[in-house]
Image (cartoon, rainbow, N blue to C red; front, side):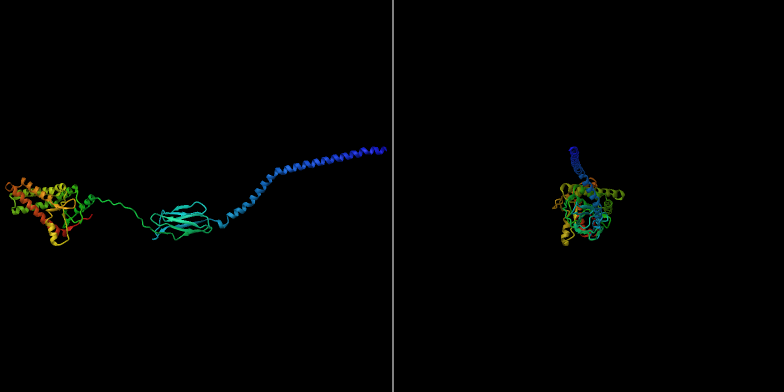
Length: 372
């Protein structure tokens, strides 16, 4: 009994130790499980990042190989713009429409050439070309990978350009041009014939042009030569009461210069400006000989006004009459008076009739015409 009593406490102690050990093991497993679960939760994002980085590393070479694939290697589009005569067209605008991006624009060089580089292949690009004065040119172009494609059929067709032009007509400018041509009219190449117009529709002369025409006639050497020749004829025929000899010739020459100058100034410049009449002879050159002769005979009596209408030639009558009246101041006393005035007036009008006939039938054949 005593032995049995002593063994009971040892068994209880052992049992107690085993229970305590079981409890400790359970707590240890529980703590370890919680730690592992926490570590797993904490490290999961890190594992995900490592996995993602590894995937990118594996994908990058494949992507690089795809970029370097010959199917996406860029190319170029080249060309030269010419017209239908194969003449190059510089400064033409070339537009390459990009279906997946902004259009590309270049301008042709001096030799008409252009180029687009780094063009993605396998796409149908609309291309248009425009230049001033030419119709637009349009086409579609597709290139292969790495290809430098040259367009050889670019020819622009010229188009008609309609422009509104305003034309202003200046009668004064045309009259000045016509008179400039008349100043170069010469009989036999050296005798001025400036008081005749061969224009079918001459413009009226301004006052300035009328005085300019008189100045040209009075300052030309042939005017002095004619008056000197006529003085010699008068002296040889003793047509006036001036004395003979050199002194008499000088008096006749001076009288002729005075008469010719006064008649030219009054009959061709002053009175035509005041009365708006044209001092020139209007050459007809067509029609019957009778009609042309009548036109020449009445020219000293009927002139054309600046308004284009026929009217009495008061300028010619007045110029001849004033010149004849002034001759009373320098002719010999024995010839002065109304008779001298009428004689000189009649002589002047007769000379103009003869000159008109000569202009219509003779001088026109030997007169060089000026150009304007």
